[in-house]
Length: 341
Picture 1 (cartoon, rainbow, N blue to C red):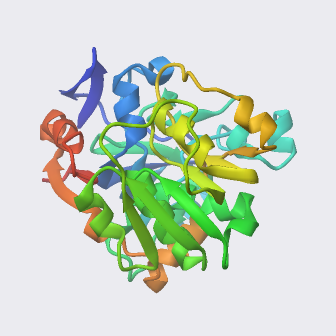
Picture 2 (cartoon, helix red, strand yellow):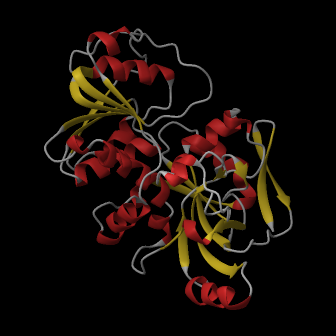
């Protein structure tokens, strides 16, 4: 099969053997894969990952790794089905009998032994095939096209905000910092939940993609304000999806006293941030990562969230490096890879 691997700060496409699924695992043929901010940070050195990146995907189950009666049951249930998959490979997915403390407590996304698809210790979706535990798979509803299903993982991450901070739902005034890939999904999820959402960004075309969906947009100046400065307009709930240390600092300044700041950004390197406003204003800071795929797939199935307008371009897998360059161009939101092309 063809697969990408990281070489330096670039992607190269190589030929390699199709992976064999372990017992309790599936071999998935990738139909579409999405490039996200985390993938770009990995190319800059995030997690020091040097394998096949990519964790947003929709695919088709081709085979299961079990034999005997268990294998026949798994094949009957999964082979030929369109699926997407959770990215954290945990104790149960690895077939371990003794669970770590986090898996025992029912929070497997923080499994002490976890591997993460395309991010940490497991090859990802920028390839023709990938493997995942059957426990990670979610069937894609028949009416959801591939171009929507490929957004399930980041959409689930956006849903996690309301799951962690329910008060940011109906009627709440919420500011979202960052008009990029994840920010676009976050404002759609929050608007669908009934929040009064204001999206702040630096790209007029990206802001236009969110306008008219129950979201107010504000175009920020290209030059960010001085660190530690307070915004004239402040909100009880602020979501930082900028993917930059400067955005983190600005988000702190935009959160009102005793407000809640939700961090969705990941970036390589350290952030120089003044922490005194967190103490003086008694802010609650919430880190937010993976969310429930069931909720994301339901939003896609009902059409309450349609992410297809965010797709700028689809590249064949063999043109992965060109796709990376395209995804970094100003004004571009989502670029997909199609291993079948």
